[in-house]
Amino acid sequence: MAVIVTICIELGIQGMCVSVRQAVCVRIQRGMCVCPAGTVAGLGVEGVTPAKGGPAGRGGGRGLRRFEEIPHTGSSGWLNLVKFWREDRFKLLHKHMERTFNTLGPIYRERLGTQSTVNILLPSDISELFRSEGLHPRRMTLQPWATHRETRQHSKGVFLKNGTEWRADRLLLNREVMMAPAVRRFLPLLDEVARDFCRLLATRVEQEGGKEERGHSLTIDPSPDLFRFALEASCHVLYGERIGLFSTSPSQESQKFIFAVERMLATTPPLLYLPPRLLWRLGAPLWTQHATAWDHIFSHAEKRIQRGVQRLHSTKAAGGGSGGAEGEFTGILGQLIDKGQLSLELIRANITELMAGGVDTTAVPLQFALYELGRNPAVQEQVRGQVRVAWARAGGDAHKALQGAPLLKGLVKETLRLYPVGITVQRYPVRDIIIQNYHIPAGTCVQACLYPLGRSRDVFQDPELFDPGRWGTQESGEGPGGGGGFRSLAFGFGARQCVGRRIAENEMQLLLMHILLSFRLSVSSSEELSTKYTLILQPETPPRITFSTL
Image (cartoon, rainbow, N blue to C red; front, side, top):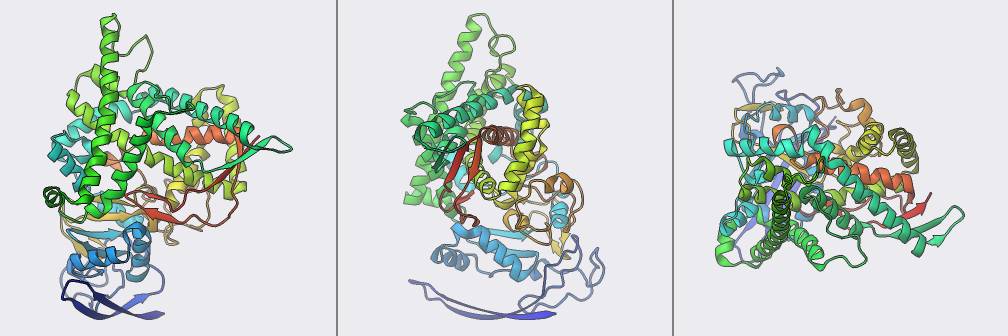
C-alpha cells in the first residue's frame, strides 16, 4: 500500500535575500526496502522516475539508476547548513538520520556546507561498500584536527593519515595494541585499575550510602568517576604508570585534560562543514576554542611522554632493557620505543591520539551500559550469573574470566548497538559500485549510519529490547537485513577499524565484570535515556545509578 507524503519547506534566512518554498511529492512504500546491494529500492523521490534503458542492476528489474537520482535532503549544502544551525540539529544528528531514512528509504544523499555524503544503513549495502575500500581504506578526514596539526607543525598519527604512509605506521602499531600477545600484556594493567575502582566505590557506598537489609546502597551520577577511570586506565596501558586519579584529591592537571577532551569533541562537529584554515586566519572564536583544547591535550600528553622516556632511559642506564624487570610490561610507549621502528615524533603523535580518543569513548558507553543493566534487572542477573561462574573458574586470571563470560562481550556490543559512540563509519570506494540499484562513482564519501542501523526492524528482531544474548546467535550469521556480520560496527571494520579497539573493549568488559561481582544496579526510571551528539553520542543528562552491595 503506497502512501503519499507532501513535504513543504520554507527557509527565511536573516541577512540573506532568500525565499524558498518547495513542495515535494514523495511516493514511498510502507516498510523499508531490504533488497541486497545493487537491487531496486522501489523508491521515487522529487518526481524522479526509474531510468529507462542502460545496463541492468544486479537485482534485475528496473535499469541501473544514476547517482543524481539518489533521494536527497536538498541540493544546496549551505542552505542545509544554515537550517541545521537555526534548528540546532547538530546535537540530534543521529535522530535526523533516523527520520530521513524512514522518509526517503535505505539510501539518501546529503550536502552540509563543504561536505557531501551518501548515507546507507542496511548490512548488505555496507558489505558492498567495504568490499570496495581497497588496500588503503579512507574515511572522512576530520579537517579541524588535521588543520590543528598543520598549523602547530605537529606530526599526524594514523587517525589522520592515508595511503602507504598510513599503512606502514598502522601495521607497526597493530603489533603493540591489536594483536593477541599485546592484549595479554596490557590486560593485567586494565584489570588492576578496574579492581581499584570497584574497591573505592565499595568503600564509598559503605561510608556514604544508606543501610539496607543486605548491605548498603548509594545513588550517584557515576560519570565523573567513569571519566577518571578511563583516563587512569589509558595512562596505565599507554605509559605504564598510574597517575593517581583515584586519590582523595586527584590532580587539577588531569581534570583539565578531561575538560579539554570534552571541549575538543564539542567544537569539532560545527567545524566539519566550514573551511577551518579560513577560520584559523580570521581567528574565529570557535576555532580558537577548538585549537586551545587540542593544545592542552598535546601539552598533557607531552609531559607524560617525557616522563616515560626519562624513566625508560634510567632503566637502560641501570643495565635493564626498556621493558624493565624481566616479564614486566611498562606500557605501549615503552614497547614502541624499544622496537625503534617508529620515530619518537610519530610515537608522540599516535600516543596523543590514543589518549585523546580513549577517555570519553569508553566512559560514555559505560554510563549507557550501567543504566541499561539497571533498568533491565533480568538481563543484569543473567550476565552476573555467567560472570560469577567464569570468575570462580578463572582463579583470578582476568583473561580466562573474560573468555568464560561471552555475555560481557555481548553486553558491550548491545550497548553500542543502541548507543554507538561514533554514529557513522565512512569509506571512499576505490571503484564504482552499485547500492540499492544506484550507481555510486569511485571516490564518493559513503557512510554507514550506525544509530538508525542499530534500531532498524529490518536489521534486528525486537530492536527496542536490550538483549546481550542476541550476539551469540546473530554475530556471524545472516540477520533480517542480510550482510553477514555487518551489524556491529561501533569500532569500524577491517584494516581501518579503531586502533584502540582492544584496549577499549577489554577496559569496558573488565570494569563491568568487577561491578557486577560487587554491586546490584538499579535506576529510578525505566525510560530510555535522551541522547545528544557532540562528535560522540552521549546522554543528554548523565543517569543516576543506585549501587547496592551484594
